[in-house]
Image (tube, rainbow, N blue to C red):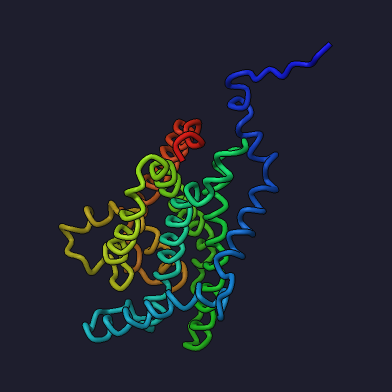
Length: 272
């Protein structure tokens, strides 16, 4: 008697979250592969993850000093680089995860696996860049003999927050880019604009009070303020409404990003 293979519609859907664990080795493989490809045949290798934020820090440090903008009573390079840490991770992780499905079109269109693995592994790769930059931040603190305050224990919370923000927006962009390749041009513009729309070289408290609630709607305001507050201390480095906005905004974008990604996931193989 010949055997027949029956494919039951929706069977894999009911096991989707279990499959994420079953395909964890693929998650690690994609993350490791992306890391190797990113720095393949480069002269300085992983140091590129440090060169960009350091150069940006130097430029913004000059802006702060020339403009005589108060850095909250801490050395200007520390003030700027403490904001570059979350911003660089967020912008890199968001861009990489947003492009991840299109960049892995051959894999997505040929075999089944939970597609969520692809953008999530791209965000994980950006953590390597973050660790390298964090080591440079430690070196800066040693150079300026700056001892972090007690609230540094809250730093993992803000790191989790920026990770969730990058993943949530990355899921939206990844799903939309399968349908609309225009996002290849939109994302770099958003990243460039976001650098100036976030408190990287300013304190939120320096903004006019009547504009501050509107400015705080940007979730990265609360996250960057939180990083500065955790690493540098100071009462004026964190704005309460911005922190609430970050918590609500990140939760919303992650939940809706997962919802939209799962809703459109079935069509990825056909449209990519």
